[in-house]
Image (tube, rainbow, N blue to C red; front, side, top):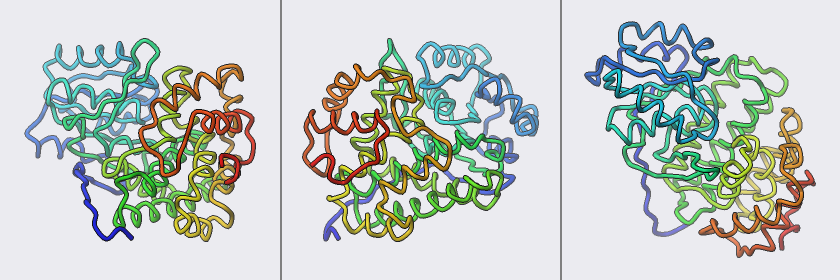
Length: 357
């Protein structure tokens, strides 16, 4: 245990529980707002029509063009809609990319943002967001990007396909796992992170067999909320740096890159966190890196970069760019180590704690 540490966690107001998605209009009134722009995808507008209808006259306008990785053109189109309709709040209903549009609007206008996550990305809990500009995923951290309110209603995820549950769930697990070894980790965040890992792993195992299980969906949403808090409190590490390169350069969905890369990065860094790995192994029944890859298989999600359209001859370039974006890691890392890790991830090999050392 660190004898001296700092703990920081500036969190949105969190409203958690089944049925709470219908409280958006009441929350807007509490904030003194009445002209909301609702941001979703086209399918999200249909899927969550009842939630949008429950907001009544508080909905001034809708934007249904959210896209993966939040292209800057999409973000600016949503911002234009917000300004043209003279909105005074933004409500997002969707996953990380949709919520990213809301963050962009909040940063540019100062308007309060109410986020209703429908996946397990955890994005709603952080002031981090990325926009895709000329093929590059540009990450930003802005205080005004932090949502005013997050309404976590597990019932919104009931219709989420199991593959998307798996991919965003692995992203949430990555948030908790990286929190164990980033430089700002401390005893408080480590205990929270281990709780999140336990809840997410058990929930995803259950959902692999019973995708509609309400209790498992609730536990997964709770674990993902913890994961988002971890990003907000202690930040991200090598794993997410690699995934951001894959997303920006190859348009690999963030959740899917998490499924493939996380087991290999955890295998690499496992020697730095033996106690945490032992705790995770007691939950998972095997070394956590191996257990996570098996879970991905059980969920029908990808285990190899080759499955995601990443060409073998591009791995060296990805490794080089990723290495130059890694600002810290609990173990020494060089470009050759990142290359070996990515080669194993491309082939879908079983991760080994010895492969990178």
